[in-house]
Length: 615
Image (cartoon, rainbow, N blue to C red; front, side, top):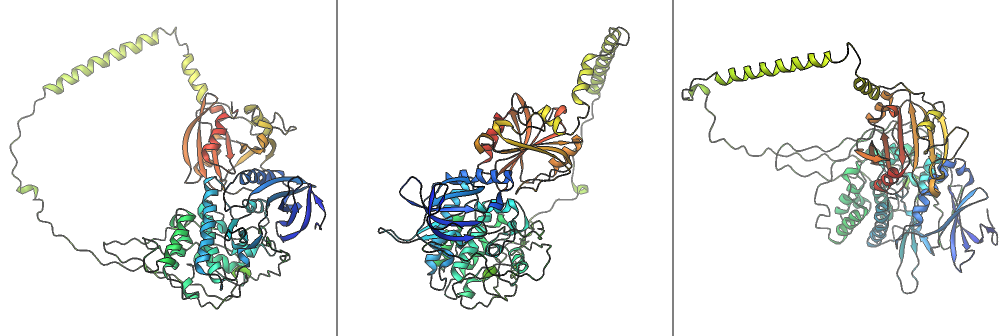
């Protein structure tokens, strides 16, 4: 722990603002400029894996380019004494987790969510997900200079580092994040911007009630709530809130991302409308009934313990820090079912609102473990109302039986055309036979056709050894020339491994099947390049199996690189991803390339790929 007057990376420490599972935050004087900054020091043990660190740094660089009035500005980052640090804008105020929800006007709570939603939509448009939206990461600046209170969202991307390093259950941070985790985070499914929307809706629930939407004495109960239970009723906890707000929250917290709002701002606007015009529906369509996502987890006693990092914040509280991994490692997600029961008849009644089933007492203004209040029972959603059969229209006429239809006599058929066609066909056939015999006779008595042999050579090649050296030989400009070297394209750092060591999969990556060897490269072009890998397989059939297992959302395209065309499969899951198959190149049939943009867009990743030296 640093003390007043200590110097770290040139910054002079004033005092500690807060501490959490990811590290500590200090108020510090900038080494060159006359201003105070919030200096975040991330724990040393999180950076043993250089590839994980490079992944984090790549996203941190993009976060530093985010320019939005509701996002805390990142000034600088670096590595000092084997510890990564980030210098950020200092916000003089408190975080939203420190407010008393019972004293916070609902209109102000919704406004805080609306400004946070604006920040999230901007970041999503830049290809950055937050992954850890919660009240502790929403900062409320004090009113100064005639300006009202301002809302800031902080700690973009830090949750990725926690996820990648496997820090799943750190005391005091796991519980704080679990209360706001989306179903897809808990099941390890593909993530996109709608995961942040779910967490934002959970944050609104906390700001209005003082507890998370799902509460339990152990994490398994909270997980079960996120995966299986409809959101509890806000109006049951606070009768003065309009029931229309329940419908808005239910849509933003739908189990299936496809059933949520298209953006965070759309959710916030619907919440505003529900408060200002409670008599008019904020959502034109009925919210579908809850989809049950049945996890397989071990439910048992859990001792959360006391937070080992209590907040020491003065005016500004970063005590929440960046929490631990929201994904529960023992939860196996099931594929979402649609959960929508279609009406077979016109005129069906719209779906009923969810029954809350919750009796909630007044909150004490403090965040409780796993959402606060204990002992709630799991609410059950009301089924959709059934429709009534529509009217039946009697047909005015029916087709008559064939026997009763009077048909006119047909004229006799003529066979003249058929005879002519047969004669022409015989003449053509005789000519083809004569030509084939003449061509065979000119071959010099049994010589082979080099063209035919060449075609066979192009479609059938001898298998190559699935080793690091064979990858280096086939892609000499992309990966190191030998296993004793470590530098790849654009000075990327590369390392190789066989299947005896399987690196932990990153978020959003597919199953690469029975690979035999791989080169992994990262940090190229000062970490501006995407990460990439080349896999070698024992057979082309193994490569085909990987392609068949790619996400259903992947889009297939044919793209050119170095005068050659290859097949790419792209999708966006926690950042742009791409698998390249070397179609129509049998000598590369046993290889597969994987590109992970980490951040940004698919188009940006594809632009890099087209310029990479694959040939």
